[in-house]
Image 1 (cartoon, rainbow, N blue to C red):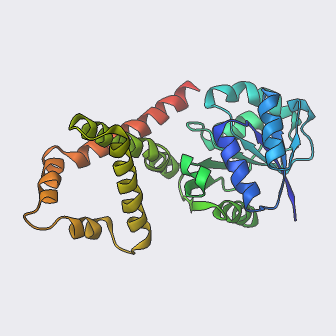
Image 2 (image 1 turned 180 degrees about the vertical axis):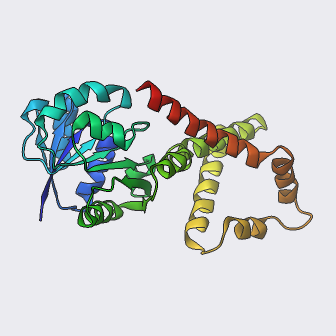
Image 3 (image 1 turned 60 degrees about the horizontal axis):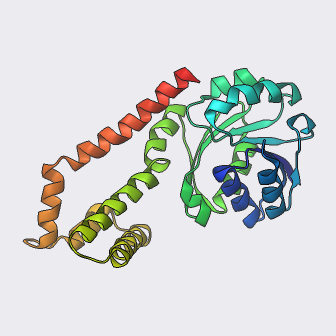
Length: 267
């Protein structure tokens, strides 16, 4: 049965998720709201949905996906709360706003926190979920199955696990992009043409990721297949180990997690 899904926010991630759901023909009627109506109209057109010109025109909605910036939520909640009946399912992709805050500000008990990442654009995303206890099993199954049609989904037992994993899956693509950028720049510094350097690095990352996803082998096993004893790769790996690469990744992801906790207190 088709559910009425309101998407509040037609920015990059709101658009990405709506397009993903529409592409796999998930069982939703789309209703799009965005302060800039041009974006709302464009997204509604692309998903064969309807535009909600004004938030106070929102009605007969089963699921509300909140895709605005966390800093915008307090004002949005003031306008949205009077429009809700109380039995809607709220799905929030906002970082740093916990379930209890969402429930309190919206007057709704059925809350889903979701954390997507940018590879959802190409159907290779990771979507993390945490459900409040009041969300029924059929509702959980429906949400998970819908997003699993175009991404990898993870149902996490504790809300804090979502915040921990966000530093890896949400921020992770940026960390990988930065690593690729640095490798390309170093190649250019050593005399390789920029076009070739970046293409080499991009293809290396793509090939390695494909091996990780498709070989059924652990990262350690795949690493050992490359790092022949006494060879050049071993020397590079020694530098990683001596430089504390593991500690750097631990520190970076922990700092991202702690920043999320700081934002919780500020928002």
